[in-house]
Image (tube, rainbow, N blue to C red; front, side):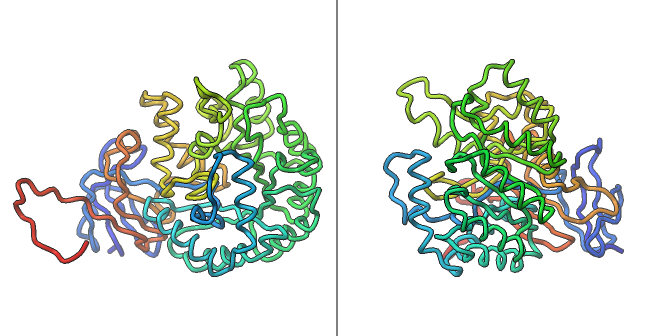
Amino acid sequence: MFDLVLANARIDGASEPLDIGIARGRIEALERGLAGRGPTIALSGRYAFPGFVETHIHLDKAGILGRCPICEGTLSEAIALSAAAKPGFTEADVFERASRVLERAIGHGTTLLRTFVEVDPRAGLRSLAAILRLRETYASLIEIEICAFAQEGLTQEMETYALLEAALEQGADLVGGCPYTDPDPARHVTLIFDLAQKYDVAVDFHIDFDLRPEASNLGPVIAETHRRGYQGRVSIGHATSLSALPPEALAGLSGRLAEAGIALTVLPATDLYINGRDSTHLVPRGVAPAHAMAGMTRAIATNNVLNPFTPFGDASLLRMANLYANLAQLGGDAALADVFGMVGAEAARLMGRSYGLAPGGPATLVVLDAPDAITALRELAQPLAGWKDGHQTFRRPTPEVYLDGAGITPVNSL
């Protein structure tokens, strides 16, 4: 007997629907004929997979749009407005805002998530305390990885360095920097690597958030990665200057990144919203062309939700992947399968996790209202249910349509 059977599921690599037998938090069997050998849920040929993987989100400053009046919509304004709001962040405030967005992410099928948490003299360690509590509170529903992050520079404000170190001591999983906000970008990169090496953690940089490849800070990151033997432990986000490179130059730089084992996260909503503000027509998309960089690990992620960097968002990675496919003008099945991987298997690889549904593996999975990943991406299919280690994490009933009002039962509320 199984604790649960998910019957008639479509999964990657199987030519026909299979039943998923779950016991003690693991997948015990993937085969036909398991229905009835335990409590059974009929999936009716819907697609089951290990869930979406969020490699780059800022839960600590989500939902602050009401505190930040946007006038220009520029990167410099977003940084300034967020910096001005941070002194007012309390642990309770951050926890409440972050939990609201996290629950949306869970309901949209995310099972693994990396969040950045800013530590500096304005935020102190208050946001970190809130996100540490968030990780513990929601541990049965989602796995959270915390990146202690220096958003506003480092070399000009070395108190931030001490706070990053304290954050790593208190439970942050990795360290991140932002060279383009520092007066000495190369030194900034070196200092972040120093901390990473001291605490034996991975590194994640916000980098090259502009359309000026001639001003790139990727060189120091590539050099430090090789010098310290950090291949496979470094990731970068934004890198929108890559979109301004001609194909030959892009191929050369992506080859260098791949050789260094550096992974890329593309952030379509933010990068599309911020970039190209100085253009009056033929406005550039300003999003790194991850689909043209197949030799390296790539992911698509949310970044910000309802703040000056991105005044929109619902933490849906399927929506983000669909947005990327649209703006990159991708429509073929192979291209869309590649894009879906950037919020699934490749994103998990960026975070150093295995990925897939197999006997003996964790019973962590999500069911989409579609027969396969490509259809789900094309149609923005709704996630219907999810499980983590055999424990159900959410359920979304399918809509009911009442033709001519037939079958409607009056209700007092929704």
